[in-house]
Length: 64
Image (tube, rainbow, N blue to C red):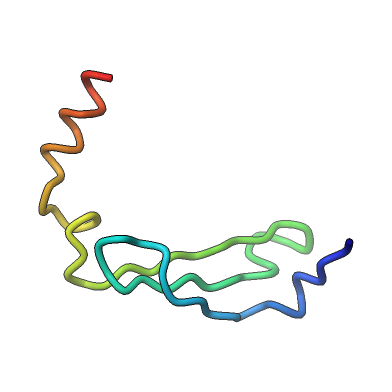
């Protein structure tokens, strides 16, 4: 099966974060003709990105 990523360029999908209404955008030629990117844009008030419970997440990573 072959997927034509160029045809999906600019497609926006809703979701991707359990804490906010994030959007995922496909960038077919992000860094050249064979480098693709899926860009996730979080809301301005997303606790995952902008503080909130950041100290607890760091502590959990430290003690795995």
